[in-house]
Image: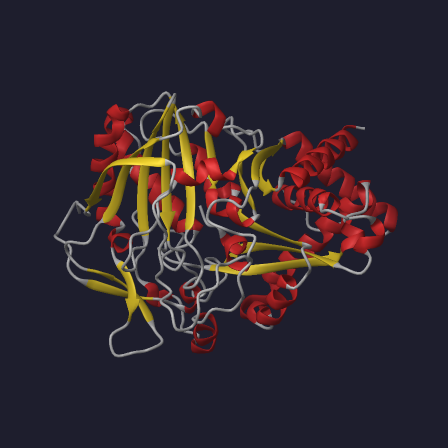
Length: 473
């Protein structure tokens, strides 16, 4: 559930004289009958006090609001709550750093660590949705719904540097499991590894599922970069006043690109490259999905006529997992952050062009960015501050991404079935898009969540439908 650059670039400003360990407040629409602290329950030896120094890749997220997401389970009832708490304790036995606290490293004024000591635990809140006129089907829907109605389903992080909080909300017709993670503790690869482990602990007794691999906790595998650490550890960007904790009047909707749609996009881009007499750009399903949505977004922006786009560049920011690219390579199970930014940009008039022209421009720009990261190695970090400042100043022609289809969030079965819907709430609040694998199991499609004001949502929906129709023709 990594709310990658979506949260990063539309952050709440935290002044340099303030703590980066700030937390939120209790959501206003969720009754809270019970809150407990769940401590790790290790399978082997007792846990001892220990610290995990933040790397430069962790420090990047110190001043970013938490990542929060919600998984909806139809027909699940409060009867499952005791098992959820017990299995959370067992999962934390392996992921015990997530029960710890972020703090300044002793004897320093500019280095941070994730510190665990016996007695630490994760806040587990059991809530009841207080708006009885809104049931499961109104919340777990692909149709546009108010972001403010979903925000109460995710918990705030407690004061004092906590990095993980969990909430189970009883709904009319099902259950919502909300998870909030401080991004400085880990990225989306790690947080979904934790979710899979928790789900396995809850469901193993009834299904005999295979045991997930334990997390890799040694952060020394990532070589120090003091120059980048010093750059990342301070707030970088001013706030965006439109992004408030309640969703700012935005609507959230989910759009699905099937395997057939994605193949059609690849075919269109290949034919356009041939028509132009240029090499075909790198072609993958995620590039096809990103390019398609980026084109629709630029076309749907208020005032995005050909004339208005001429003087503006469009930017698309998305994450790259560097686990296999660092020297030495970092294990897949590494618990921490190992993401780097990818910056695609192109003239707004090119991306916003109708039909194959705009689709080719969007996909080609994204493919070129990925090629640069693959070839660039450590050099991919050079000049990143200038690029991010440029992108943030793009006058609204900026789209950022949270999540990944590789996370397989719809496989998160706690023993009462697969989730009917998964939303990245922090992405919805900031106006990023969230991406996940399409529901249905093995369909190879991609689903995209996007939050926009009502008028822009209507325009985006029309652009999306028209673009799908063009693919068919």
